[in-house]
Image (cartoon, rainbow, N blue to C red; front, side, top):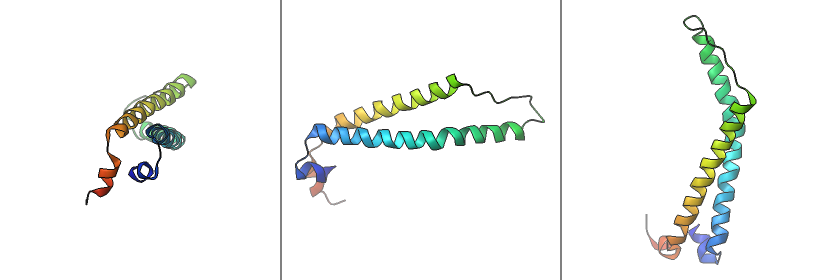
Length: 98
C-alpha cells in the first residue's frame, strides 16, 4: 500500500481497494469454509454417534446468519484497516529497513 501511496493513489482509493480485497477474501472463505465446516461437523457427529444421539440440522437461517456475521465482521475489520491506513506516513514506511 505504501507503493500505491507514493505513486499517487489517494487515501480513499486505497481504502476502497483494501475493503474490496477483504470482501473478495471473505467470499472465498465463505464458499470454502461453510461446506468444509459442515463436513467436519458431520464427521464429528458420526464419530461420536455411539456416545451421543445427535443429529446435524443446518437450516436456511443457520446459513444466512453465518454468512451475514462473516460479512459484518469482515466489513468492520476492513473499515478499521482503511481508517488506520490514513494515519500511516507511507513515504516513511518505504524508507524503513526491516
